[in-house]
Length: 256
Ligand code: ATP
Ligand code: IP8
Image (cartoon, rainbow, N blue to C red; front, side, top):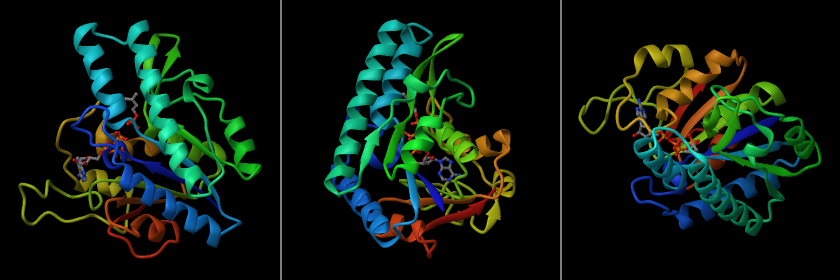
């Protein structure tokens, strides 16, 4: 079986503090991934990480000042996303995982729902490597655009026969309403993503790639089917490992 794991920017970085990595969380997530791989040798993994406080604030600033992603912005965002990718790959290597960074801007033309030559990613997986992609900026026919890590997850899922997707975030799953303002807010679980979209409210600052709503809408648009989807809190130790092993988690277990 193939599993795609998204290390959300909300969990591996502090999204409200520019260029700030949660190193302790990243190292623990890497070790959970490593334990999983050691226990399940036949199981293949692909990792994607988000932009968090390395991607989103920079892109927002460009959109605010220039109104679009210009050349300077493209190169700055590329630099910081590569930096974050190195840190993530380094954490995985330190946990004995054969991780290799793959730069989406080198294989994707963007944009809306990614459009990438993922064949190389499939070959790396076949070779026993753990490819590590990330939300990025890319050159599309309409200029420089953002490619969300979420879109990449779904694109890879559709193209490479992924059977389980684990979104690691900073929340206890997909809530029906904002738990900070509604004391009766519940985590939605055991449903098709379609039902979740009908039952959930989405709040907060929509980051440049659409936040939680964006994550859940894309598989329906791409026509992804037959996939188990976990949205789990990566701040809770053991939660990622449990999701990978299909056990009980603090989070939402959904399907599409
Ligand atoms: P990044 O895009 O940087 O990789 P991420 O993938 O970790 O980040 P976000 O896109 O920030 O995650 O989405 C997670 C956030 O979505 C949560 O921190 C929460 O504030 C927000 N959110 C909005 N609506 C909901 C909802 N119904 N249930 C759970 N979280 C929600
Ligand atoms: O955080 C966005 O990817 P995401 C990447 O996975 C940038 O949505 C550069 C903002």
